[in-house]
Image (cartoon, rainbow, N blue to C red; front, side, top):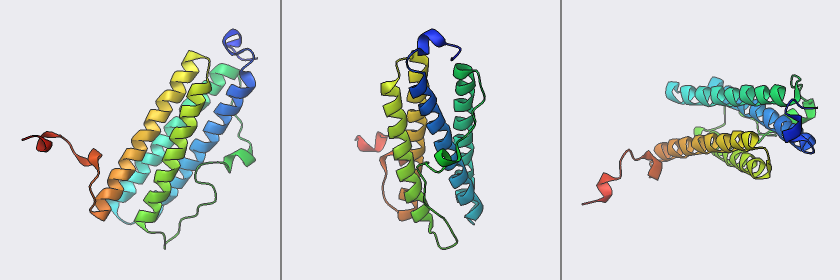
Length: 170
């Protein structure tokens, strides 16, 4: 039984499954971004993917902490679940272009944001709902960062690149 038994009673299996899935997804994202960081030759791009990998590691640690708090046990990953990340089946090699890698990452961040938003909507425990809402926001921030990066590479225009909207006014 979870430490917060009264708050989680009847919902433990769903929360346990949701947290386990979230942890495994974060491990997959961390590893993917880490591999991209290692493969990228451009120092600035390397650093951006290294920071994304570190962010996903922070999410994993946060989620594992909540798992221990709620279930009074350390999280042990099911190897099958580790293969269920947003990046499943995607490999990156020397032929992968920066734009292709960014495109993969953008799609993964959109799926991660949707996953956390759905889990937040399903959560009946306020602290767990807030945890998932915050993670959805962080994943959306990653999405925006990646969209801006794609835009800068392609020479396109992305609204979030703008520091100020002053130029829109006379």
